[in-house]
Image 1 (cartoon, rainbow, N blue to C red):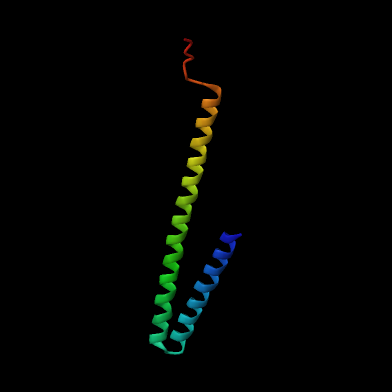
Image 2 (cartoon, rainbow, N blue to C red):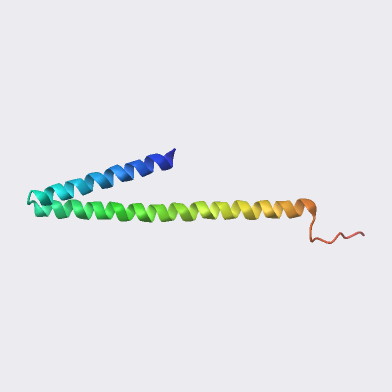
Length: 86
């Protein structure tokens, strides 16, 4: 549920900042237009960075779980491990 709300929040904030930038440029308020453009670009870049970081964390978790499950599978069945009888 957290990912859906994060996505909606990012979409709404980026959309609002874009609208404010375009509207201010349209009404010849160049300073405010560039201000909202900069804020929108900064927020958008943060969203891209956050998405990439979240994807790396998710993929690392998948890899960790896979490695653990494979190791447990082979340890449980003693594959490739010689039996030593003393």
